[in-house]
Length: 600
Image (cartoon, rainbow, N blue to C red; front, side, top):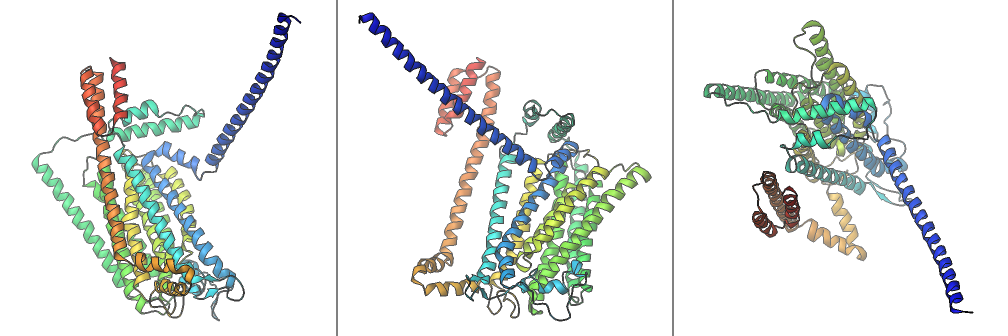
């Protein structure tokens, strides 16, 4: 066989191997492409399913497109609080109520006590002997008869403590995240241009959705532009007149809040034993929370704020002072008078909170009728100069904060109170949506609502959550529990259950490390001092980082303006770059250098 034949055969063999290898590679590429496409389709379908199953997603879009982000923030806030209460119900029902029902399925109802129907409003009577309240739970370790043991005291304490800690962490995270997005990184100067040029969703093809998006974008642009309106300086006499009006309205609103708190305290000293008479106090409290804020809203007729947000903030602060003063008076009365008068005082406090929640819901519905429906009828039929009313975002959001404060306070005294809150918020969402659509108009003066949502979360944290946490902590650490009911009966304080648990663990060698941590870490003042010091250091570091970013953003904007106008030369770019190298911003300045090369 000649050399050419061998070369020809060898070429055919190599060609066959190359063909088989390329076909294998093509099969592998086709398989990988098919698998990748399948994963992408699966991810897209999961995202679509998540959006489809998202609660009230379409309603939120409709409200935002028609009434703007200010009104939409109320419904987002309501949905957020609903998630809080759903989580609270799941935790309490799973770790407290279900074990109680498993080991004691039948409540200890005294003879002669039956369900009459009035309990739905009062929360007393038949409900007072069920797991609805603190007194319906046992203090014994469940499952001692051969089944697994379950300590109700520890379960009750740690469930309430874990829920409050998680709520506090969620509020702090939400507040910090919202502050960073709405204040630190917010660009008031370029927001309108960004919204106009870069925020349109080209995937929207439905005509109705396009109209909603256009209306939403238009209202957002109005909100951005209204923030830039500057009022000329008024003469000295006019400014003094405005300051006098502000001082008078603030003194009047503060005096009314203090007077309402004093009247609630004197009224609360009445009888709490007669079931029907117990509705008087929550009725008066809810009536004050309905009427006085409507009176506060009249102040805007004589107060003239150039910025619509300042007017909203003034209404918010006045309503917060009113509601928190009333709740503070009630908490003082419960902790001082009720705790020393009744044998099962925790259930009495739980019933009082139940009545406040129910009565507040009824008055919110009345407020929607009188405040929005009748205003619409009067403004369109009788006095047409008044016009169609606007949706009062501040007052309605504060109603939600007040309701959530009641739920947080009642988490210890009524573990199933979140069930009432869930039902209440569900009905309230649809009630407010229908009332908004039929009775209200889009706001005539649009104010930036993105930062208002941060203010709402901050108020929800302080004084709402902090106040509720303080009352629960005072009950746990200071007040003695009832001797005849509840899981902590017979103890000096609720926290004594932890000390008893530690004494039991001290007898077991395997848990000595737990006892050591409790005695030398958890009960040590130095530990909390170090934690506070570390938190302060982190706050200072993040504050410096925030200030540095704000300064850097200002410098970068000025440099972009200089580059676009041709005033920035190459050496100047190098000088700025060397300065930013020392501040750790090389990557940003490299981007600017590329921009300067493009402009040049």
